[in-house]
Image 1: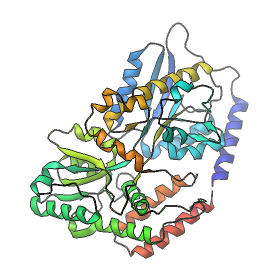
Image 2: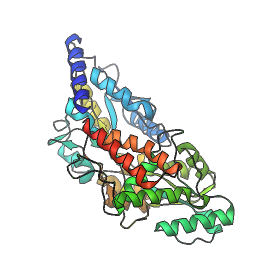
Image 3: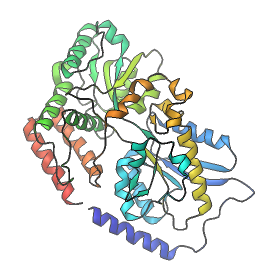
Image 4: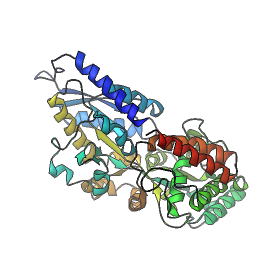
Length: 421
C-alpha cells in the first residue's frame, strides 16, 4: 500500500507540474501583506485556542496575514493527501508527528534545513525536534507534545471519601466504585465507541498499558505485531475491567458525550489528551485534578503524539511565501504559552521555562509526563494500525469478548496491514 501511495502521488505531482504555469503565484507587494493559507484539524476543544493564536499573530505585525480554514479531523488527512499530491495544499499545514513518515518519502514536504536558523532550532527540546527528521533532513517543526492523562473530579472524590489519586488499577476501581455508591454518579468516563470519532481512547490506553509492562506494539524491526502475549492479554483484560467492572463506566459512550458528562460533574475519572485541559477549566463550577496517566500496570508510560508544522512543496514554490511561513511557525512556537492554554505541552525550552507557561494551572502537574511518553512506531503502517485497532478494541471491550480470541484477531489484522507497506 505504501508503494502504491507513493507511486500515485508521484504521478499526480508530475502531471500537475507538466501543466502548471511557469510563473509563480503573485506575492504581496507594497500594497499589502503576504497572504498565507493554513489548514487546521483543531476542531475539538483546542480549536478556539488555535484560532485565537492566528488572530493574535495577524494583529502582531502587518507583514503577513494568515487565513485559517478548519477541516474536520475525520476528513483532514484524506483531503490533505489529495492536495499534497496535486501540489495545491495550503502554504503551511499541521501534521501529527506519527504521520510524517507517510508523506516524506513521496517528496511532498519541503526540507526545512536551509530555511530555519540554528538559533531557532537550539531552543527546541531535543526529542520532539529529532522526531521530525528523516534521512538526516528536517521536514517539520514540533508545536507541542500531547500525552494522554487522567482528569479527576475533586467534588465527587471528596463526597466518596477518596483522598488520594489512584495509582494502580485496583485503587482506581475501588475509588470508582466508592464514587458510584456514594453519589450515584459514574465512577469513570472512558469513551469506548465510534459514535462520534473512532474509539481512540481505547487505543491510547491499550498502547499505554502494554508499554507499562515493558512490552511494545510492534517487533523491533517493525515487521509484525508484538502484543499477542501476556502484555497484551493483561492490557486488554485491564481495559475490559476498567470499562465493564461493577457498572462504574457507561457502555457505548462516545468521545463527545464523555467530555460533556465530565464537564457536568457526572463522572469521577476521565481520560483524554492534555488538549482537553483548556476546555475543562473554562467550565464553571468544575474543580478537577489533571495528572499523568497512572502506572496501572507497573511503570509510568503514556501514549503521546506531537502536532508539527510543515511546508508543502507547491507547483510553483514562492520563496517569499516560504520565508513568511517560517516566520509564522517561529512566532507560533515561540508563543506556545498561548497554545498551552488549550492544555498542550510546548516544545521550546524558552516557553517551558517562561513565566506565562508556569503561571498556568495544571500544566506543570503533567508536563513531567513527557519523560515517560511512548514514541510512535516509525513505520508508515502505524496510522492505519492505530485507526484499525480502535475499531477492534471497541468490539473487544464493549462486547467483553474473550481476550485471547480478540488478541488473535487483532494480531492477524495488524500483520495483514503491515504486509501491504
